[in-house]
Length: 224
Image (cartoon, rainbow, N blue to C red; front, top):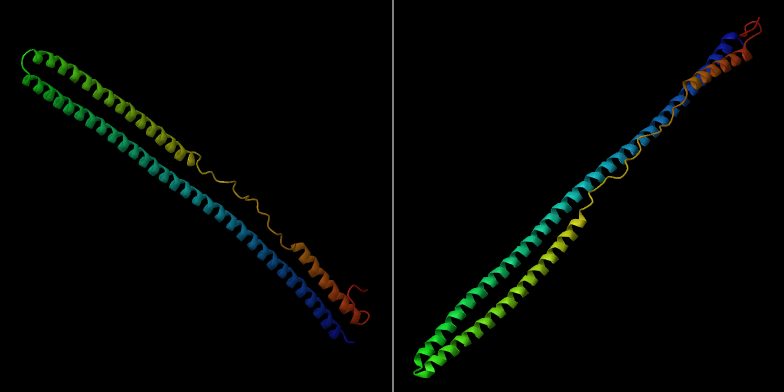
């Protein structure tokens, strides 16, 4: 076979080998780049999910705090209204006592002036005693009512305080973010450039070997 043919075969062999080596290197680079993009995307998704989880947790905690404050205010307002009603009821009892006492005195004293003679004096004493007994009974009733009212107010206060403490316990522990995802990301290493060089050199050597296989004696590469 003539020398130009052997040279052509050698060049084609070397070119094909080099092209294959470069193509394989580029494919490996593209594959590594795709894997690294996937790794980076997953890391970014983890970070975004972590941030969203924290934002949601903070928002939910703040909303819970506001809800608890509103419920506590409602409890306080309800207790204040109950205490005010009890105080008004106490004032009503006092006014009722005064009115009953005045009516009682007027009635008994008015009847005493109608009596005549010796009976008038004794009736006045009896009227005074009867007024005293009636007053003592009314005062006793009012006292019992005041004691019952105070107990009711104290009971309602304790219940309101317990409810407020129970509500506060729901938000006593602020939201705390969990551990952040690790930022130590390990990417896939791409193909070695030294390997590409070695493959290109190997392709060139194969091309030279092909040339030598078809070159006439005295024209072979590396020959004397």
